[in-house]
Amino acid sequence: HVQLVESGGGSVQDGGSLRLSCVASGSRFSMMAWFRQAPGKEREGVAAISLARLTTYSNSVKGRFTISQDSAKSTLYLQMNSLKPEDSAMYYCAVRTSSALVPPPLRPSDYNYWGQGTQVTVS
Image (tube, rainbow, N blue to C red; front, side):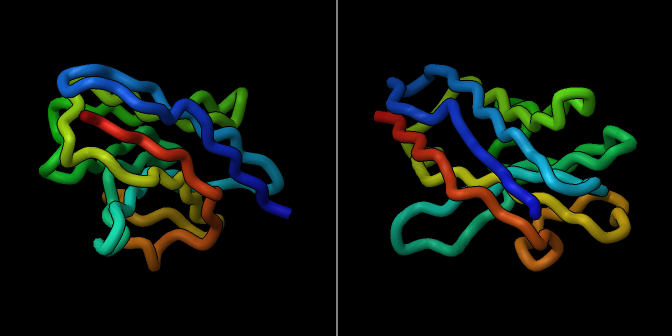
């Protein structure tokens, strides 16, 4: 039984920082990723990482966000700096339990387990 629990969301001012965490349990994961979804918009891939530490970022967050993982703790992180109002959304952690893809993709359909989300609001 795969379980993903996100934390770290909140409200910050324009230019501020937040660090999201996702504790994963219940299986081995080939890839982990962060997605976000704002009201009225489609779910968007933000960043992804493979077991080999390969990373992919969306153009909208490249240079501002950093994805990392602590394999020993089965925890995924997203350090978000220089936050903008357009970064406001519900952020979801997702994992893939089948074979890894290279580079790790940002398509929701490539991930088969999802967390409940944590809200990020930038104003």
